[in-house]
Length: 41
Picture 1 (cartoon, rainbow, N blue to C red):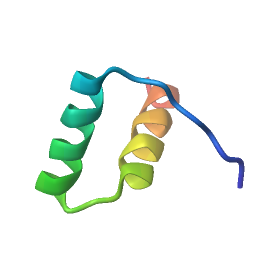
Picture 2 (cartoon, helix red, strand yellow):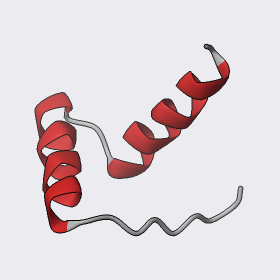
Picture 3 (spheres, helix red, strand yellow):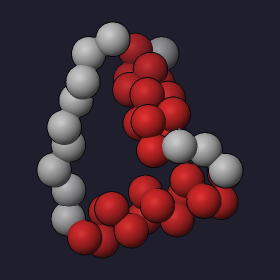
Picture 4 (cartoon, helix red, strand yellow):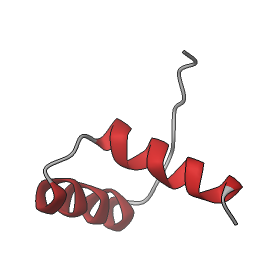
């Protein structure tokens, strides 16, 4: 598995944290799901 570093604004990071907490999922899980959704389109 590859490692990825992502730079984002404080607002973007807060949004990610809020989403992860709401869905009870890790940041890695959420980001991987978003990446997979790119190929589904």
